[in-house]
Image (cartoon, rainbow, N blue to C red; front, side):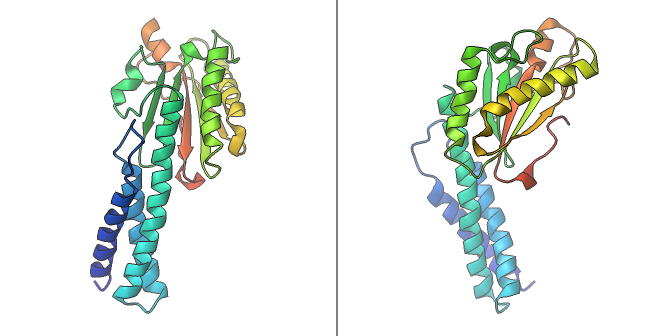
Amino acid sequence: MKLTKPILAATVAAFMLGGCYNQPGLVEDTSYNRTKTGAATGALAGAAIGYNTGSRDSKSAIIGGLLGAALGGAVGYSMDQQANEVARALGTGVNNDPLAALDPNRDIVVSKTNSYVKIMFRDRMMFATASSRLQPSARAKVQKVGQVLANYPQTVVGVAGFTDNVGSYSYNLDLSQKRATTVGNLLATNGRPFIKGCSYNKALVPNDSAKNRALNRRVEVYLYADSKRMSDPCR
């Protein structure tokens, strides 16, 4: 109960700091939800640490909360900024509509959650049938993402490949791994990305038509603030 008022105060301060990070100029997406979430989470953690390691009073908790909010907000802002910069480099915007990935006219979808930024590359623009060699235009797109990431050495990168269900599971597992590796090799600016082939797991739609199978063939790139936030992309 002693921590309730300090935490509330720190949380309010967090959202005040979150507002300070809402700077103009990144026109693709202006919600900056990661900034706000990071500030709020940092405030709660900082308030508890400040209270427990200081003199166990409101002042220590609030100071810890402010520091935590500033740090969490800065990390969140960095990820929001990366989402916008990646989208701009790829000639698109940040689109969090879950239906965007089901639109056959969209070859690239950049989205973000509170845990990661995701770039989905549709297979038809990436690889020829049964190939793991990037087509020239696709290589240029992936390299643009790598150029953005070069400015954010702290970002952890994950790459996952997905296929349709034509052929055996093991064949598609190998193909999806090779495709993810090809993309990952171009994104190794910040060190070796985490790479995984998912075969035809986690299909976006049932593999019951040529149109649907084309939607399921894709490579997804995940950007994380740290490795602890990573999850299995195949599930």
